[in-house]
Length: 67
Image (cartoon, rainbow, N blue to C red):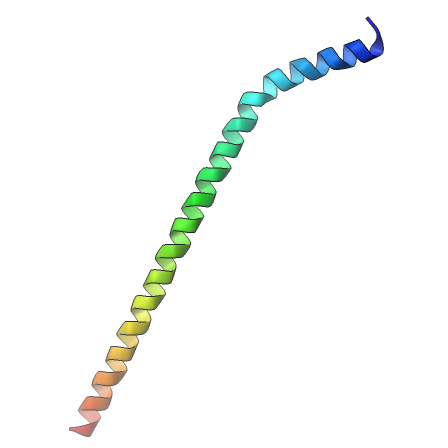
């Protein structure tokens, strides 16, 4: 076998061993990215709700001060 053939054979064996792991890693990365996106959306909703709460609280204090 020539050195090139040996290298090709090694590459084939290496690719066969790592293909499944790579796809699992990419799947896990995609799952984590989706989870991060979901958490960011929840955080944005919480911030928006807290802003509304703060505005209501300020409005109620202003109304009480006028009474």
